[in-house]
Length: 316
Image 1 (cartoon, rainbow, N blue to C red):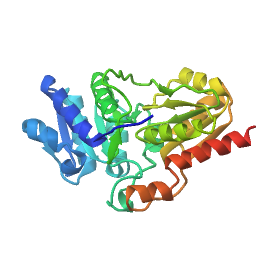
Image 2 (image 1 turned 60 degrees about the vertical axis):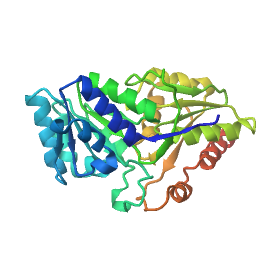
Image 3 (image 1 turned 30 degrees about the horizontal axis):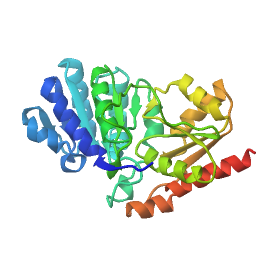
């Protein structure tokens, strides 16, 4: 399958919230001095009266968002780097937003490994396990610009806190304009019979390339894209695993409690299946060019294909 390169998810996010605000005057945006990077500057240009620049005071920013949602009935969209959402503001999110189920949408930009040369302190690939462990939190990792916009629109109809995992680079287009997103549902990208592979976010594009490589070797991959990591449709996960009886999970994030952990938890309880977790091991990251980082941390399509081959060989 040949994929066309599309926009970065952060640009799609900026466009989506701006368009949504044209029709919903309850939407406001709070930014942590990162608008030109996370692209909330698109919203600022169109709706300056509903844009609040809070600077590098993330805990205060999320506290303010909680107040806007609770007292004023607004729909605050809070945007900054994922490292600042998950690490710096964790306590405020947990106490002020998650516990009371405040209707706040968190746009976590520069998530995952490919955060440019922002420095290793800004790399955040343990965000999924941290946020999905938080009660009342919905965790969404869209795969392309089309899914990002659809997921944002769906989240604006949902009353409760949502964490969006948004990556930095340009992203291949996975879906057409007719694509329908539903919170909690998975998407079968490719039908197969030999091994079921679960992936999420833009990493699914690399998994599609890996499936093409494996098809040339006679290995038939059943590929399931998981845009909502929490909640996750247990019946869909079980059905996809049972289709082949063998599962590989792969993600641009830590394998400690991430997407792979979520899949393994479901299967261990409802349909025990051999599962191989592929992703970033229990380590911190480094700064560098995208291609070099994908190679170093074993996340290229060739690495994904190798993980699948190894799992098949171990379970013959």
